[in-house]
Length: 393
Ligand code: NAD
Ligand code: MG
Image (cartoon, rainbow, N blue to C red):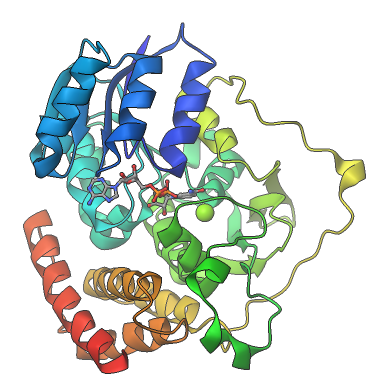
């Protein structure tokens, strides 16, 4: 029986995770659920899955959560604040941690799970982008397993030979990783119209229903850029080993090309419960609730090269992946600030890439040798990005 902590339970990935868990009560017990501030959703979830612990990251909400849990007759311990997130991610009883907090806020709890040697189901790509080698090394040093939840990385993982999954892909005869992406909601819109796109339009993804930050990242293709960096770290490959392929239907979730010409693809309906169920049960298979793919109903199956003029953020990320860690950390921090400013209506859609580029140009090269230095650097870059936002607003 797995004891599972779901970090970011109230978000899109968190909800899909609880949906999969509810289908297998004999295999998974929820140890802890966490949220940022949506305590109504957290309580509703707790009534169903009866966790041992509830955590709200916003310390000021401790009393409200305590009161609501008591009114709902929940038999669980209540905690608040960032340290509590790390505690429930690393507690002795926990065997599996779903790392599904969005953004840099997920770094410390995800890292705590890795340091405690847990099986870490990693959705929080920003944590890996920010800390790359430190994160992967901590996993190796502490016997933690990282199983990718991002649908592309989960697909790649499934297409790799079992014995080579985290190292020496060349030795396994692999010539390329083909990272697919839909191109988001603005793939075909005239480039000159991009500057007028609203947060609502950016968040209306054609194939996936996701949180607002990743939805904007999908519209700018920064999401694919972050995934590019994520893939370099997860699979121990260089930027030259990865090609990005636009595949608007999101049926193929990514591919691995071998030197004999074979290409293996993982396919399925675009529903995150498939990669979640795969990682939760690995190496077994369990029902996820996702309908089987109906090939006869697929009307089109198309592929394109990405257009960097339309998606400058993707180019920024690919370039950052070729540099030392600081570049990816800086890009992630600038992007989080810019996306938030866009979602708040302070800047235009096209300002996001301009702010990211301007911030990277000002970022000092720095060697990031511990998680504290990563957090400190992330803060420095956020201050630079906020100035750039003020300039654009
Ligand atoms: P979301 O916005 O729907 O949910 C985010 C969760 O994180 C919520 O539970 C929220 O309460 C919590 N959270 C936010 N800020 C926090 C903070 N400061 N401290 C503690 N908790 C905080 O996001 P999502 O779409 O579920 O994405 C979560 C992560 O998974 C992201 O890193 C995203 O890139 C990744 N991911 C998502 C999808 C998807 O389909 N949604 C696919 C692949 C990867
Ligand atoms: Mg993805």
